[in-house]
Structure formats: C-alpha cells, structure tokens
Length: 397
Ligand SMILES: *Cc1c(COP(=O)(O)O)cnc(C)c1O
Image (cartoon, rainbow, N blue to C red; front, side, top):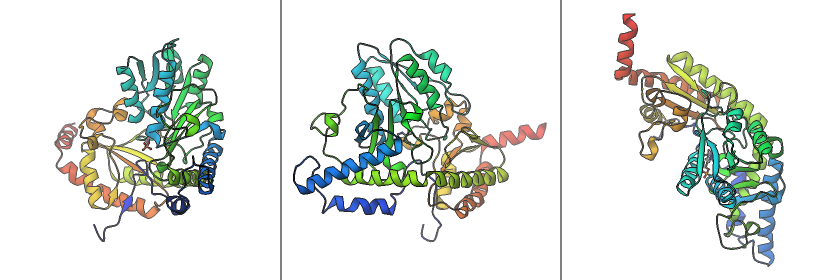
C-alpha cells in the first residue's frame, strides 16, 4: 500500500484519538497510577481526575455529575440501561419498545430479554429511517417499562425525533432511553431539552479512546446493577476505573463540544460535495436516510446492480476506507437490518456504501473518492448480470 493515498471515511466505526487527548491520558498510565478508591495522595489525585471527567461529561450533556455513570463504552451503557430497567421493573411490567433500526447493542439485548420472558415491540420506520411518535404512543401499554430509541442511526445517519418520543413516554409514565453514541460531538445532545431519562455515549466516536463511555441516568430512575463487586460508581457499577480512558473521555467530550458547530458545518459541506460528485458521475445511485435530518458526516448510498463488498474491496486497493451497510463482516450474507427496514429491496441493500467523514478529511479526499469510484462502478457493472438484464430491458423500450 506504500505510495497509495489513504483516505479514512469510516468515522462512524471509530475515530482516531486526538493528540491532546492522548497527551492528557499519558500520566495516568504511569506517574498518576493510584487506585481512585485508595486513600493516600496519588489515589486522591486519581479520584479527583475521575470526578473532573464526570463533570466534563455532565456539563456537555446538561446533567448533574451524580447522574453520569462511567462504563466500558456504548455497548455496556446500552446493555445496562435496558437490562437494568427491565430487571428492576419485573413484576410491574414486562414490555419494552424499541425500533427495527437500533445498533446491535440494543437489538441483541432486547432479543436476550425476550428469551428471559419479556415482550419487545420493534417499531417500524419510514423510508427515511424515521420513527413516528404517534406509532410509539399507540404501542405503549400498561405493561410497558421502557422505550429505547437511538438519537442518530449509525448506518444511514438519520436523526430521530427524540424530544417528541421522550415527551410521549413522560406523559405515559414510561422510562425513555436513547443511544446517542453517534450523536455526541456532531449534534446538540442536552438531556433536559430532549427530556430523556437515560442516554448512552462512547468516547471513541468523538476522538476519545476506545473502551470507555458513559450512561446518563436521571436522578430517581430505578435500574438494577449490571456489574457486581466493589463500591465504584456509587455502588452501581463495580470495577476499578479505567483511569486513563476516563480522563481521555473527559477531555475529548469538552474538546468535541467546543468545536461541534464548526465541525458539523465543515462535515456537511464535505458530505454534500461527495454526494454531488458521485451522483453527477454515476447513474442509478440513491441516497439512503433522510435528506436533511441526518448526521453531518454520514453519506449512505446504494449503487444499483452491484455489490457493496466488491466496491469496498476495490476502494480499499485505492487506499479508501469505507464500509457497507451489510453485515457481511459478521459472516452473515443478509443485508443490513437498517436498509431492509427503510424498505430497500435485498439487491439494492446489497449495493450500499457508507462514507462517514471526520476531522482529518479534506476537499482533496472527497475529490479523490469522486475520481476513484466511477471507474470501479463501471468495471463491476460490466461484470454484473443484474446490469446486463437492466440494459437489455431498457433498450427494448
Ligand atoms: C459504536 C456504537 C455503539 C457501541 O459503542 P462501543 O463503545 O463501541 O461499545 C453503540 N451504538 C451505536 C449507535 C454506535 O454507533
């Protein structure tokens, strides 16, 4: 790959840790190694560092520091919110509502709870990937314990009407959780304005380190503990803290919030340039997700008549890192559950590509993709039986 340009367009999968974040973390691997639960000097310094990070997270979310629980990432936060409320509410209710397009951290947790005897409603979405708050209202019963709806979808970038959905739940006395892992750092995430009871986030999606995240839990919400052991996190989440990671998350979220507006504006500009470039040079391309209510850095496309995996492979040879909408990486040949939920036929869902932009991307990167993709598509379509069939049928007419 030497000599080839490398363009990273998979920021929804993860982001590089910002240099100043790494810098802030480093002392906590060595000189400042004290266990925050101990009582001597360096331990007190560690405790203070954890408290500071908790305050940094709380400030950005407009929450109280006591409402922030530090976790090992977005997956743990989602698991804890959903299992915690389900198990704490067992007896009072047995019903959970979520959507068909959630991240697997939510979907697979809900499927696990179904095996434990809970009932789960998976709300459908419209062609843009949006949930209808009135469909949510209709799905709530007196057995409903929890509703979990993501703030922004990780595949197609669609933003959900969270304040409206949370409002419906509040009126009906049902707890509301949102997976905001893709949203934090890109769109405003204020737990008071949104009216949510619980919210998950993950540092490595906003230029922080991997393996650390947080769950916001509104004061007074009852949820069972997920990890049992020591008294960390006010006895609700045991285990010696990931001190360097937590320090990094605090610095990263403050940094992300300070640049958020400019970041979003810049990414939306690059994303639109990328879409215009591709759609102007390749026919039969469609945009997946909402045209405006979407994450600034997300571009999800279907290129008809060919396979996303083949495009990815050839893009990779040209140094471009992107992803498909499909779950082939997990060994499954089924197309993405998100693309099927927005109504794409299987063969179109298979031809999907996700580009997610980030801090390091430039106009030059976008132009490189716009130059590189059309010959790849042309090459693959030349070998595509679907395309040959289409050409025959359209030339007859
Ligand atoms: C990345 C992601 C997660 C998982 O977070 P981890 O910290 O990687 O466990 C959950 N939900 C969404 C929407 C994500 O994008």
